[in-house]
Image (cartoon, rainbow, N blue to C red; front, side, top):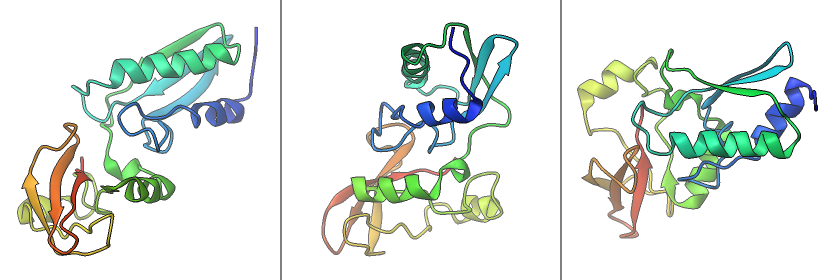
Length: 169
């Protein structure tokens, strides 16, 4: 039986990519909420990006596979729905990786529990979304729904490239 430190386990989990956006890890997205030992059982709390996220089961499987690969035998994954996940939990490094991958990261502070959340909801689609390819702010929302439910489809009026925007939650 392997008993690793929680710091080591966080490092292992940082190697688990998000199945829909493989350039960022589940820890960078902030969906791994807690790692703790309860006697000889490792408990990992996972908060899905939203309750109906189709990738949740795959993420759980990938987390379990990684930890079993590292020798963890007694493992309990816990679904933590409160507080609900927010895009404010995405790390700065993940935001940079999203941009480099061609996805506009969520606008800081506009998640529903952020300081600007209410103002963003009132403004609706008036947020300025920067093109991840050329940096232009001359962008238009094409559809509220992008390649996955957590993204919206945009197009840049300057470089004419389509791109996804990671919607605020």
